[in-house]
Length: 389
Ligand code: ATP
Ligand code: MG
Image 1: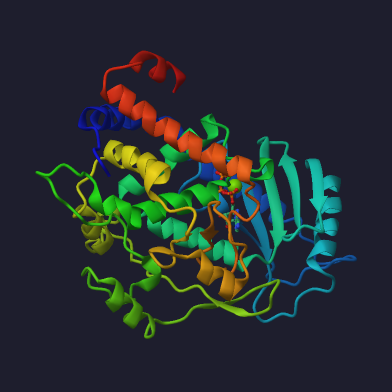
Image 2 (image 1 turned 90 degrees about the horizontal axis):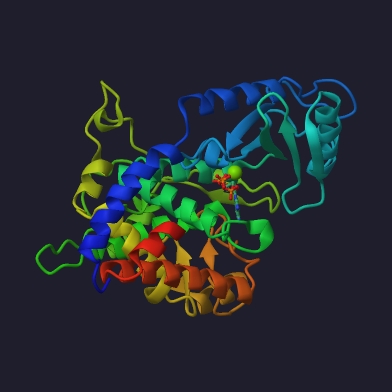
């Protein structure tokens, strides 16, 4: 990044630290959600027209389980079936319709079924808590990407801090609404992780504190017996061939998808008294950037540095790949809009619905945010910018 604007970065770090407690989930948040999950799970019928085999479970994914959620987030759940039993009769669309009737009959509010969506889903509100919930059927890849995000969140406290602030900013600027044509929270978290894997290596950029260490490694390319060493790209790609595979069958396409990523046992830093030292934490510690510096650089990166026209953002690669290649291999349209590869469903563009107008609008929001930082640094318009958030 050109200049990380030390004065602004310091002020931002302080502001972020004072804002964060209000953005993080409350103590009660998880217990409330677990209670709702249990209550709804108990409704799954083992008799009747749509029966679910013994051992059918309801699992939580998305921000209620990925360590990037808060009390206001919806509760994303999916039905999973026991490995050994055959899938219950009927398509997931039919199961969604059956679930909708069941939820309605049991007092859930505003029940809406979308049985024909790419991922069939039923939405409702749980009256006791007022929680907005949704349920899909057999969505094992969503469970895995939730775990992947959770693992990244543990690397260093700055990962969560930056992600919460970015989500907060995107919501405040009304550009965090996938059904309205802007970006899902999932897309923003992938943008944060990509930035931390790549451009964060050059933060802070002042000549007297050169750093050049990424803040997070690429977890999908670290071997299970990783010793904490920095691996260069070639080593990682070579090592990839020996990585164990963790196959998950894609519920729609039927093929096996590799969902392996490195996970670390709970460590002392993470409040586990018998834990070991955290190799991930040590890895991240080589990057000395403050959260404020990272936020300014994040805005700068997606305003001026990331090559939207030619590159697909890929957390799986810890970098990016040419759009042309993605077009050849997976038939993606070549256009100049933001494209994000899903870490496991690599043929799937997380932002495929993004239209030109919204893409431009989102880029303008990044540029506006960075410009505010610059203005602030130059001592202009500081009060208005502050008031506007
Ligand atoms: P929020 O706090 O806004 O609810 P969230 O982390 O739950 O954030 P969502 O965007 O609601 O994020 O997505 C929930 C989950 O659905 C994600 O964890 C991911 O598994 C899946 N998901 C969401 N959007 C996409 C997408 N465009 N492509 C693939 N999977 C997605
Ligand atoms: Mg959600």
